[in-house]
Length: 303
Length: 251
Image: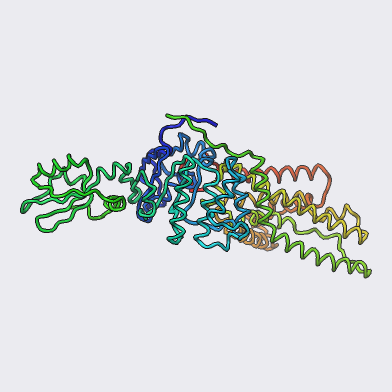
């Protein structure tokens, strides 16, 4: 089956979702390039899981629409879901009476692209025991089984909602290493939702930051590294930051006449603006991914 | 814009077979219990027949109507028709998928009824009961129709048990009210809201239906009940269809 698609694997257009009076997603415009590992970051309740469910049409949006490989998630729901491997945040024991092997066979029956040999390999890699009842699995074991179910049909899009949740550090590292191997073997776009950025830092090449349902940042990791930096500046006594500097400010702290700013923008532009405002830039530091993302979520933004 | 190969969706045949398999696995524990009960029943009844006792009452109708109505709760056990579960992540049009599961349940129900009828016939044969009378003890068509209504209930309502209990309560109250208005001293209330007429017609239709009366009446009753059952099921399954935009938390 061939289809002409946009260069974005996933695109949402003004996607909004509410639960009663609570807003889960507020006009979200996700743009996930094909082949990207896009990490969707946000605090608990920021709307990460809702966004993933909307892509699978498990939760229906109140406004807006979403596309996966150019297919509308509502008009072409089955075709969209055929492209997706999904690991939900919470594992409900819907099939607790089944053994792992029976569940794998059941899921396989719904995916013509299911790769039996690869599934067997994944079972081995993730240490899933086919004869075990799914009801008896621990959270970590359930997660590993979910990885088998999500990867075995080599989906072009993986939606991983807190994939490392419930895994101990050793298994988490091993699992993420297997995921990296899978991505090296199989051309895949991945959206990983997490609030533990460090866990997936090695995989991420694009980042989206959700804050209370709003997408407050969306950029490639290179752009993030290049444009979000910490500036240590010295300012004259009684100096007030001009308005044009306040808007792109993510975080600032003050100690005497020295201030630290986390600002968005090309370094030479920001430095020029600070200098023009009367501040002296002493030092500019690039931020680690987690630090940069935390800056977007920080409540210290207001001066 | 680039060209890429997308994964195909599954064929319906495979989906239906997968649902038949999984429903079979869901029902297996209950089926084993029923089989054990029937085995014990067989030993007891055969013992009675050999001992010269009646052993086998061939006139009573079995309550398969009620079983048919409640059986969808077992078919959908733990599936969460209204939650974002694994079932709804499958790459299959959702109304069709829901109906495939209902069909799978139907296949097992009919299989179980067939086995049950065979069991009755075997016992009837031992007890010299006429086969025609034995068969009429199991209202297969009515049970199938009740299964459709039960499935519609499970698929169409978020809280089917609450609705069921609520409806039961209302019917009970209506019946009580009907009894009150039908008392001679309350004649003037006879035609007020009571459900007597409705219940009486329904009772007659059921009686006509389950006891194999004259064919035309049976056919009309069957047509009506199946028509109603299918309509209710289609409406219920449509709540889950893919192409519903906005404002319907799925699934």
